Image (cartoon, rainbow, N blue to C red):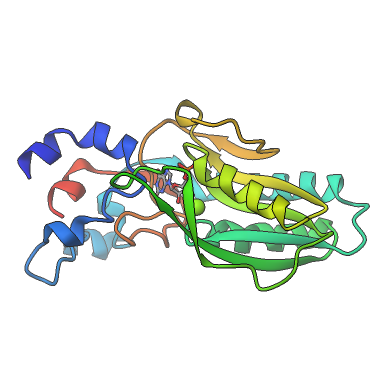
Length: 232
Ligand code: XMP
Ligand code: MG
């Protein structure tokens, strides 16, 4: 176990979600859940503030960028008559999908919201690009203009598979809007037309992104303190 933590920074960069297999490794006596936050921190603000080492992108920056991206997408698709089909890949992109769709509503053509869930087969938790569909689209997308709404592009493997899949279902066009991109990590070139922020190759949480299913509700994106991993 100690060996794991010594390797933590590299480990976090390599793995999609370092907490994913923690349940298998066993956890604290309270049913495997790490203890989040401290009572003092809860009195001062949100429970998670004490767990965050530093904020990478603030709530205001996300709001501003989302409006900007929505304006661009709206301008580029003003001609689309039957509306846009937004496809969100659960769960990470859920916050961005909700805010992006509302921002798009102020400028753009009508949009329909679709959700997919996929699981990436890989060695350990590293993405391999081989993807299994857990929840498929609820409708036919043939002839539709599709915008994939992504939280973060890391290796690009999942997205590259998804784009091929959507194209195979005869969409009229498929484009991607991603709020975050880790440029150093991109293994396969994926055409992401709209990118919010390029962020460092660090494991981040918040605004939909999780560590062991926690921290998704943070309104900003940040990096966890090392001791959060150590105590889990
Ligand atoms: P690819 O195939 O591009 O997968 O490697 C991208 C997906 O990996 C997840 N991901 C992260 N999740 N913090 C997270 O909570 C991160 O720093 C991070 N980097 C990648 C995410 O689900 C994304 O859609
Ligand atoms: Mg995702």
